[in-house]
Length: 400
Image 1 (cartoon, rainbow, N blue to C red):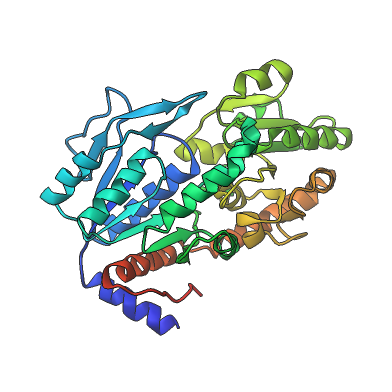
Image 2 (image 1 turned 90 degrees about the horizontal axis):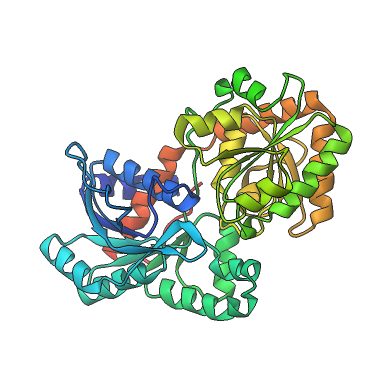
């Protein structure tokens, strides 16, 4: 099997491709989708493939820098109501047809399912360009957190219709692939996620930053990184931290991120530490300066932050699915609660905070586990999957 992957990857390396990637989110927007796709683009370009990026324009100052070699088509978009940190793209089939007729890509990969993504599907199919998609966000699961649970079934039907128009749908775990298949999604392919262990490292621990948080070297610092939004299940972060404080009264809770719930949380819990959005080395320093990572979300397709926390040397409390299920060794690098069992999650978080020395040892185990996650190998598989779209292959060996 390894020989098959190597032979296909070699074939891909011998053919430099033009790959159209369409996304409605892109850095400096801070979310897992934007950061994941940016890493894919970087990995493909390092392998000498040409990437034609199509994305939403991010304000009046969003223009091409003279030194930026990335070929980018910026199209109009809109801020999502009630969620100004995120954008959607307007329909743009005519602009995409013109763009791809002028510089035809070998394949188009559509990342997001909004109006721009749907236009990309239609334009690519009209031009007979092979199409790949990826599933990054459980929008049907989000609906219940915004009192729109009745929309879950029609949203899922739309997502199924959208992705089944492509030759393949990339998903981050076998668990998610199986779930989507039960809902009628066809041609799912697993593409795991990696983590930059040079950037996210315990070596970035900063005693001065901890002092700013009101923490001494012996103070347990509990961290959550992510959007401050209803779908992130933040009430459980608060409940788990309150349980931790019964055991460790000096413990501090640090929230990294922004979102619709930020103002409400600041008003109700002024003693928490609010850091806003952080990126790059600054974000990595925040991870490494904490001790325990809480991840209570129930709506993730993966959860990149779990890998980032583990690479930074943090033990993790999470539910047993997605990235946590794939990478956390219960009792070794963290604890996993049964999916949706809030009481078990709180109990695990409190148990982790009870023994500071054991917490540090589990963080070291988490770091060692992440060193084994090789981003280069993941990029190799991405190449193989894209080549299969172009050549008409309908199956691909799993990474292993």
